Amino acid sequence: RGRMVEMAEAMGTPHALAIPFPAQGHVIPLMELSHCLAERGFKITFVNTEFIHERLIKALPEDSNIKNQIHLVSIPDGLGPGGDRSLRKLCECIPSAMPSDLEELIAKINESSKDKITCIIADEYMGWAVKVAKKMGIPQAAFWPANACLRALLVLIPQLIEEGIIDANGITRKQEMIQLSSNLPVFDTTQLPWHCFDGLVMQQTVFHHLFTNNQVVKDTDWLLCNSFYEIESSAYPLNPNLLPIGPLLAGSRQRELAGNFWPEDSTCLSWLNQQPSCSVIYVAFGSFTVLDQTQFHELALGLELTGLPFLWVVRPDLTAGQAATYPDGFQARVAARGRMGGWVPQQKVLAHPSIACFLTHCGWNSTMEGLSTGVPFLCWPYFADQFLNQAYIYDVWKVGLQLNSDDNGIISKEEIKKKVEAVLGDEKIRTRALALKEMAKNSVSEGGSSMKNLNDFVEAMKGK
Ligand code: UDP
Image (spheres, rainbow, N blue to C red):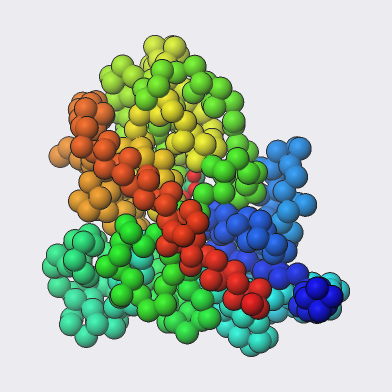
């Protein structure tokens, strides 16, 4: 026993440094992974950009205990106070501005602490951090926060260029419907995820960012993703070494999660307690998506028209330009059954028995969360990988319906009412959604595929 203790002491506590891309949908899943590792005996240093760090700290509840579990630190993103932090600027600036500060931070931690950094877990969008880890001789893992099919698409980019489907800047040259492998979504080559951004320069910047990082992390020690094998098994042979460890759902396991950019309003949970079982439409568009005023009004009227209770997350920046205004008299008319408000604990909301369906923008985290709770989806995608996620939900897993726009590009109130009724009345969708919920639960239970991958990673990082 004495020798075991000696060995454990010599090895010290495993200490992971996690570094997400500065966007909500990236911070949350990496924070969840960090919690999983903390529970398994890891010390965690979580590195945000200064800008995001400040938002996170402001959003923490006063009685937060998080700092005792996760060491939250920050380094500058190079864009200065008040700088333009559009996706394009972040992609252009971060890879040159942040590496030396990260190196310095690690050196400082290693000098001052007995628990030296033993591994670096970098969001794949921050591939440069894998390079820093390699340079400093620290074991590394890259973390892919989206689906494995999208990642396979990035792996296959040289082939797409060679076949003349896209040019070297990612711009489509041939319109085709492609399917990378059986049981994966079919998608249109004119709607590749980076095409959904405004303007050619932006599209090319995002394309190069994704492709370059995909190349950079190719031979990293570990390549993890927030998905599970059973829902997209044909994507893994196309993704050498990619290990699914999801669904990562720390918040739903009643833990405090320090990843929110907005303060969380948990009072919606007691409101949900008062609603009949399986009756509430939950409406949320993640952290980025923006609606124009006309569409915002139409959505409000559509929810009213359903006659059902609804919980609608209306972020302060959900509408383009000015703050959202509701249709005349809307708030009074729906007061008894509708709740519009700020950021909610989404994982807990989705797991609540009163939720009947999830009207979502189909971000990957929201998709995984809805799937893990067995809730049927109504898909309202906007950009990036959301169309691909919708294709999974609607065409492949068949656990939801899509909302279609009219000739003016608007999703009408009648369409909303019709699809809500259709999804709630479809027993097959509900049965399939519940079967996927079970599959998700099994994958992260003892002996499940994701749990096994996570355990292998943990053991390796503990040096066993
Ligand atoms: N989310 C939340 N409360 C809300 C709305 C969203 O906690 O009121 C979380 C949601 O649970 C998910 C994340 O924000 O984990 C959004 O990520 P997603 O990939 O779905 O969308 P993105 O914001 O990246 O577009």
